[in-house]
Length: 253
Image 1 (tube, rainbow, N blue to C red):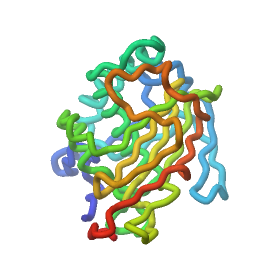
Image 2: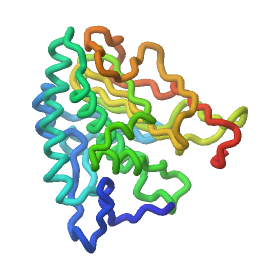
Image 3: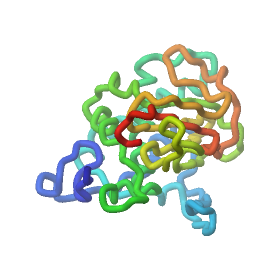
Image 4: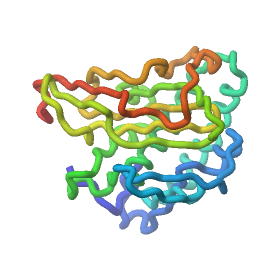
């Protein structure tokens, strides 16, 4: 599968339908406001091998990969809806409701897909052996509000115990195997995002339904979960703790 570079990453409209692809910020103004994050703050971005540090502002992390209709429409509404999730975090003892879980899952997929493009070169998938597999099906499900189709994703939660109120880790799992054969991890990009006091772990394995292990303490996102019951973890997640095991007979093996 080759991804069209001029297609919107969510609705798949191409440049003939929407001539302008717009830049989507990794952290929008509404979400930053809801979680008490300063978007002008600087933070370090490390290359994959940690050989180079790049300093940037939170507001400066963005990618031009979505059409104006998506950016100004449902995506803008989703950013504002994240205020409901922030209220759940602040309440502590309140149970996560289904509607809030849907918002959290949709925002997590949106943010993960952006990181796949920003850090994982997903826009070059089909042209580069180093590009991660973009979670296109999940992106389309979010666009069409088919939240039940996100059940195959791995979405985990923890509490950010650090003073840092925004951080992310992106890459591939520490171990990926097909049966007893080790393989590269680009079939399962991983994002760990700390936004305010909440930490989100999201994995999009392809094929779906492998055996997955993440860091001890990460809780599966589910209705009824209370923020006060989440395990406190450092702002920078440890993706090396993640292992994925696909069935040995999958074609990708």
